[in-house]
Image (cartoon, rainbow, N blue to C red; front, side, top):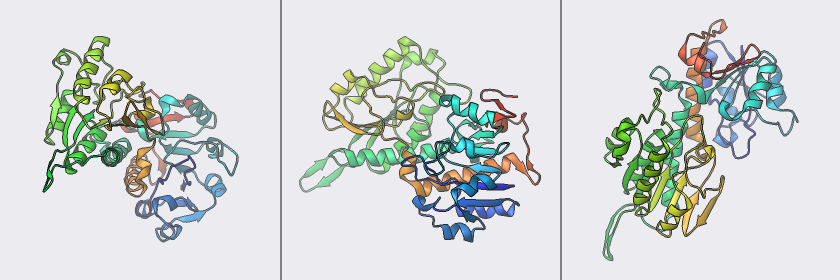
Length: 378
């Protein structure tokens, strides 16, 4: 089977689906790999490196006409040169693996199903022990959490660490992280390495324990002890109206004392909860900063503007989109390893082996046999 790696065409997307290191192993498994010219350019990977790895560098049109399997980072969109939607360029009966965000892209799923494309979404892979090596969401969250702490340190007009100087002692910055998932934990670790004093809030007991293991203070809300706050997969659940009100009051108490707030709170399949209404922002320190990593799901701050950094009531609010793409070299490296492991899980020497009893396969399969299968388990 032939694998095609197109150049990503969504604006500001710098990642690439496969790097040469992965291609070497994929070619050894008997696959042919074609890479669109310039696909790795923004990830600092020249075409010559792809050729050395055993891939064939081709035009964008050839990728879609010649290849059975298309591997991408972003979902299919209108191709600016070929003037067709990438979903229509994929071979009928072919395969697609990418971040499809199936919850938000019903029309795309219908189009892929109509073309009998078997599509898998990297953001639908179950977050289980067996799937850890394929968990691209966690990989990209690691990048986002790291970059969030660096962005915050650059935004505020203060040092992060404590300094003992001839001019006196400089107090360390205070950082509040909302959500102790992968992004939150990486933000915590990075902020601590930079010397900040960090505390974290998460509704899930297990997540708080993980944060505390990094040596930070976990803010607890006793009222949540009687409420089921997480799914079987470890995702946060939507809270009751009363619990959400108390949650915001507690967060506000700590936010107004903080120099930096990094928010990562999301509820799978739903809009991100608003945890920072305008009334809270008004009471925060002038010159403090909110990095809203939940912006692509609506944002945790009421005043966040997607894709922008704005100042409201003297507070810097950062809503940059697609944060992992800002570190394309290592983000591509991590994603490539995830997609490589996933590809090997789905295939054998005869091609694709669609075992719908397999949790990883069934959970990530979005369209198959002209049917939208998202949400089905068998």
